[in-house]
Image (cartoon, rainbow over all chains, first blue to last red):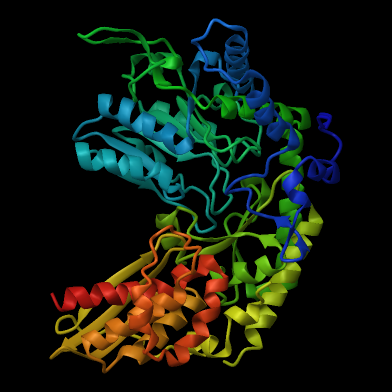
Length: 422
Length: 158
């Protein structure tokens, strides 16, 4: 396969992109698959799949240990991937890029290491009403252990952050942890503005970029955040690999999280000396294939260009909001912001009174994959007044025909359930 | 390929639209047990009034999909008025019907002794839910109310 050519002016050639993703060739229930669940996990391009295979077939060896040829190749491939990710996120140094299992582990690392070294009874952290459980539960665990107060920034009626009382809510807060994009509403949050407000109040900020990084140009320097977490599998990479980025002086001052091999400079019976960044936070043999695979995913996205990705998703989301609302009218509710400037391509749908689980079952009969449920954001679902939604989310390989098929299947679901005896 | 009609039998949709024994009972004398389906966020409350070893009143509240709601509704009509032991037999028979033979997805050991216990219990309308096993993801929807009832019976008779 060849890498797509970066051209921010031309629209994305989704047919060519689709051909790069082997899974999108398959049929489900006698229909060509229509994959609309990239907010849960993206599909993987051939480049990433081949990279994983090549690692195991040609250079499989443990890293930072052996002095033999393939061990050197494996080590340099791992560190090359780290450097590529560093450039992709606009980080000043590759030593600030720490590999974790996923974004959840990255946030837990902050909660356990930074949180337990710095927060005690009387301290407070601020999160928002649209967070994923991954950016709620680690803080609740810390709160119950240390008596730390958790504050929740509310939402506006159309699903954006309500910044009216932000400064007041940040008063006395040590950390402001928020998502750059909501996995339920698609809402994009004003990261730089939130980071500035946090710093103004003397707080640090942690950005959960899991739903943003696959879809938008990301630059931690421009965001001026202190920590940023994301996962690899939502951005064309393998599962089992995520990243914590943090400012070097903060990471340096933090105690190690997990202990073991790789994270030490020296160990004696009396104790240990932690390794330098980033290895200080990477205990044990890392997921080498997955790291290299994530590096390949970054190469794939860079070749398309993140501006192009964003432009494609704005156009497709706009098309989806327009055509779905026009056709289905009052039968359909799409939660979250209506303006594509404020949102990504995550569409949380309620259709008539059909339960999302039943809706997704009907869609599955047409080969359409959407997520039904609470999307690991139960406090947000409670706020929306729904137990569950059916969520369709688009990515680089989706086009208008996928939206049209979704639209047809929604009508079909309405038909199916209305024909049954009431 | 299993079609939608295998899953959404008419009687299921009838119980979904017109749930029987819906509402809450006063606690006490009734006992309330709560169940969650972490997969989809469905929640159910089973209210049980057990008197002299008999389920003399029962109701369901909460929210969920057509499968979980209709299963709960049919469950109430199946066990209301029965003794605790009789209700447990219906629970066992229903769980046997919902188990995937030889390919148990959660990997738990399938206890075949249950089948003899369940085989002489008539499930009546509940047979309509048999099609759910062709849709493994939905089995948890169908069994949510039953697991909650099981838990409620243990608590109410403890």
